[in-house]
Structures are given as structure tokens and as C-alpha cells.
Image (cartoon, rainbow, N blue to C red; front, side, top):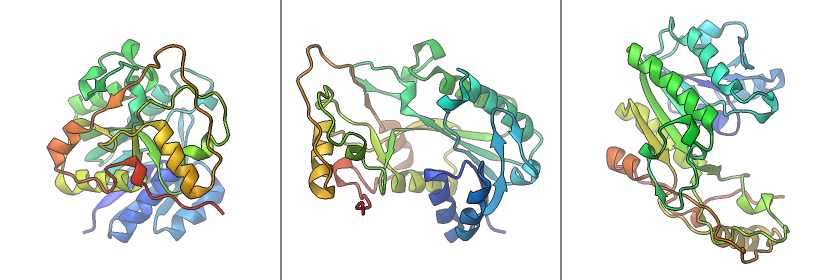
Length: 280
């Protein structure tokens, strides 16, 4: 019997993840909120479901979607929901469907945005309460999932991913030609999409459950270095950096716990080496 995974949220990461697992022989189900995307999921070997989590879970066959071994939750908080804790409600409502399901494992895609700017290297234990977090709604969502884990037999692994880059997500594209930037010397906390996909596979294949991990490339070049290389190689206009009048707050996210636990070797150790799809 093939392994099964349901991916809630087949966007930029989820669609590629679904195709990867389908090509590996997994039984893959995936959700989208847009009817026009259903054929795209099907073309990539994914059994497609139209599911809204806004914040109520709405859609036919939700229970069928959740009839799986592993659920990957990949629905980042949306500012457009116009409610501070809308994402918390999304997760809470989702869990009412998860509890009676056959799900054995959950992977939650969180973010390193949960960490405040501590002006030093940052580790998983540096976030304790929502009040300390730069993204309190995500910490609250993590806590809901952790509560389910404590009261049930479901395995849970939380991945706090850095800035997801690669292919058409090119850092300098978003800052091309801008003037007066003061963050040129700030070190980046990026991770390539290919690494996130391989890391999720590593977790499932090696049963690395019931942990929280920072997922970022181990090397942290500066934004100025990243933008300069992007602009040179891909033809964007270099932004202008100026010296700030005051020290800029920063954080350097450590992937040490993940590396020690998994022995994983990053495809891209250094964001300066990321593969990008050259713009037309």
C-alpha cells in the first residue's frame, strides 16, 4: 500500500510538493480555494479538492480529504482576512475535522517570523509566549496543534521556515531600483523550496516527529550581497543602500537543531547559490 499525504494549501510550495510526492509513488490529495486551479493539481498527479478555510472549513468531501496518513498544513495567515486571530480560528476549526479522522501525522508550516528581532542568533526555544512573538497568531496556532498532540496519538512536527526562495521567487525582484534602503548589512534567513520539499520527505521517511525545527540555509549572507548577485545574473536594477543613522535590528536563525537531529545535508547551504528561473 502506498503512503498517503494530504496537502492543505497547494500554492507555490504545496503544488510542487504534491507533484514531488506523487512522482515518488505517494497517494497525494491537495486542496485549493480556486476552482480554476483544480485541473492544475490533477495534471500534477494530485487528487484535487476545493476547500475553503476562511476561517470556517467549507467544502465537499472534507472528511475524504482528511482520510490520509499525513496532513501537511500549508495555509499561512492572510492579512486580507482583516482579523488578527483569523488564522487561529482556521486551525481551530480545522482540528474539529482532524480529531475524528484517520490522520497519524501532521506537519505544520510555520515561519521564522514568529521570532522577535533579538540582535543575535536565534533558536527554537527563543519563543515562549505570543506576547514575545513577532507573529503571535502563528504561535497561537502552533499551541493549538501542540494541545491536540498532547491529548491524542497524532504525531506533530512544526517547521519554522525562513523566507522561501527559488525559481520565480527572486529577492532582488521585489526591491529592484528602490532607493534609500537601510538594511543592506542585515543577514538573510532564507531557504530554497527544493530544500523544504526534501526536508519534508526526510521527516516522513525517517519518522522525525514531535519536534519543532528552524528550517533555513546554514549560511547567512547579507541582503546587499544577495541583491547584487541577483541583479548581476538576472538583469534587475540594483537597489540603492544607504548607511542607517541607527543600528538596524536583526536576527540570525539557527538550523542547528534540525541538522543535529536529522543529519540532513542542504542542497543549498548558501543563498548566494540558489537556483532561480531567469525572467523572460
